[in-house]
Amino acid sequence: MNIDSMQYSVLMPLWHKEQLDYLQQSMQSMVQQNKPPQEFVFVLDQPISKKMKSFIQSLLPASIDIQFVKAYHLHGQGLGALLKEGVTKCSCPYIARMDSDDISLPSRCEKELQLFAMFPDLAVVGSYLTEFSHTPKDLHSVRKVPQQGMSIRHFAKYRNPMNHSTVMLKKDALLSVGNYDSNFSYCEDYELWYRMIKKGYVLYNIQESLLYYRTGSDFLDRRSRKGNRHAYLKLRKIMLKDHFINYFEFLLFTFIQYFFSVSPNYMKKFIYHNLRK
Image 1 (cartoon, helix red, strand yellow):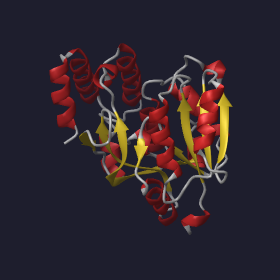
Image 2 (cartoon, rainbow, N blue to C red):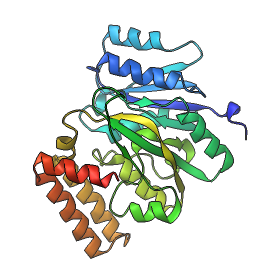
Image 3 (tube, rainbow, N blue to C red):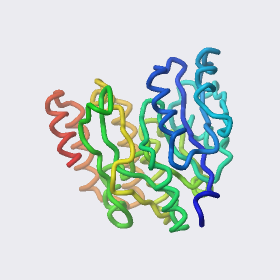
């Protein structure tokens, strides 16, 4: 299959108070892909201003379609609910996830589509990502994930095996497992990968960084919040019930996450950055 004929949508949830310079960098990084998208699908849980809407429209060439999905009824229900709504509105067979403050490298989507073209059984393709706080010149670390097969399955027992903001998904495979689950607002992607792995779908990670991921100064604090812990615990209980993990693994990984959440920030930084290696 020639990737010139392959079409993909960019799926991006949008906050009504987005920082416009971050949004501009993010959108331009997708518009300027070696293989540009056919459409942008923005999911809104609150109305955006006319100024923001005009700003967004000014960044997109006429060759790229745009949808503003008004999902105001989902306000407060989390990212999983917004993504689930957005997926149903995407008109292309492939969907590239993108956050409004990250920056994709120009070759990202081209390389992901090339893999889909070469291996039709793939359902999800992602990559490494490089973390930064303010500008891509201020880089922290590379978040590495396993490449394929049993390495992804084993990794998924204790950590998220895909970098969500880097992935491109095959829409029909995503819908066949029930789409995103709005009940997992803090780990909606991890729970989705788990269902796809259980169903036998093939996931793949390109072993290079194709995206700059903006962490922000409160990144580690956000990962330690009570809601985040509860969502991961809920998912691990499902894994335990499915015999995907055993009791020892359940207790070990639950303890590690709790220890991380209550540790002082200097300890969190040490643990987090060593996990990246």
